Each structure stands twice: as C-alpha cells, then as structure tokens.
Image (cartoon, rainbow, N blue to C red; front, top):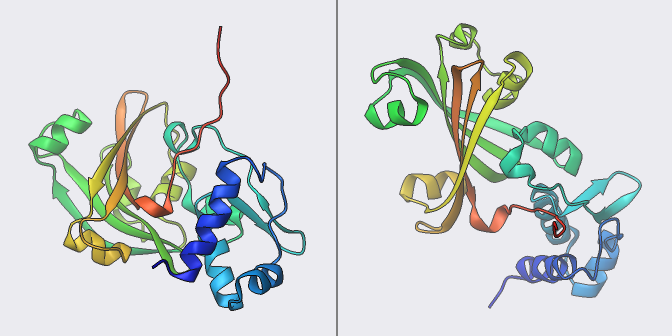
Length: 234
C-alpha cells in the first residue's frame, strides 16, 4: 500500500505529465491539499519540495506554486548547477563533501579522460541535499594540471561543480546517461534501497583541448527525470 505522501505526489505528477495541468497552472495551496487528502502540512510540504527539486513545479514565496516550464534537455545538454536549480525551485540546498584525496588515475579513468594512467587528480565525493532529502551523489575528478588552484580550495561555500563553473571556462563537454542499480554504499548515502534503480549522468569537460573535470552524478530513479520539449522537423 502506498504511503500517503507518495499517493499525493503520484496524483500531482499524473496531472502534470498528462497535460491536465499545463506549465504555469497553479498548484492547490498547501491548506487545500491538506483538506483534500486529510493530511498534515509536513506531508504536503514534503511532496511539494520533492516535486520542486525534480523540476516539475516552481515554488514562489507569496505567489504560490505553479507547474514549471519545461527546460528542454537541461539535464543532458547543460552543465548543471545544483545551487542554482534549488534557488529556482525555491528549496533549501546544502552539500556535504564526503571524501577528498589526490590520487593517480587507473587505466579505466585514463581511457575515459584521454589522459595517461597515473596522472594525479583531485578526487571528490559530494552529496547534494535539497530540503534534507539526498538528491544526488557526485564522484568528481579534477585535473590539477589544468586547475591547480583546486588543490587548496576548501569548497566550503560552493560545491565543486559550481566552483568550477565560476572559475574555469569550458569549451567542450561530453555527456553520457545510463541506468545503474544502487550498491550498498550508494544506497546508504542516498537513503534508498540497495539495488534501487538510479540514473547516472557522466560529464566530462575540456578547456581548449585541456581536460578539466569528470563528474559521475547518480540520482535515485524516483527523484529525477530528463525532460525535453520538441516539435516535428520537416
């Protein structure tokens, strides 16, 4: 049997995805949803926070909550900034650096990045959290030959991805999206079941041919989606 917050979320998602509630449509106020489903404000707030974090709705203080405008291929073709996405969605964002080290990359990483095996890189593991719900686990490599200042950067005010976007202009990027199942460590960090379906986005960027960074970002399958809007082309 579904939990009540999941049923409310499913109901709202169905209306949005079917087009019954188009972009800009006002979502019922919290007190209206509380009355309709006979639940607490905390339950309603949890549902709306999750939908906002997933980009389906936009929460505006004093103006209410509306169905978000689709952002075409945003997750695939644009370089993602978690802090900016959270601000746009009206949710609280924070991040936690889980590990940090300088390591020599192995043959697999060398093949992905095009750099020689043994190249030293800054390795970071970051958990992205919105409204106290883990939204993504990020494993990142930063080439210290291209971005030497990253070695001493504490990443206290901004997560590594946001810091790089503001400091290092990139000229080329590659994205790969694939499905994975959460292993035990990943499941614990993301607060999901072991083996749960996840979406992994691999992103690599270069600056005028020099490798900058690789980010492998894993999202719980039920907390993220790729949205694109397009028209037939003759």
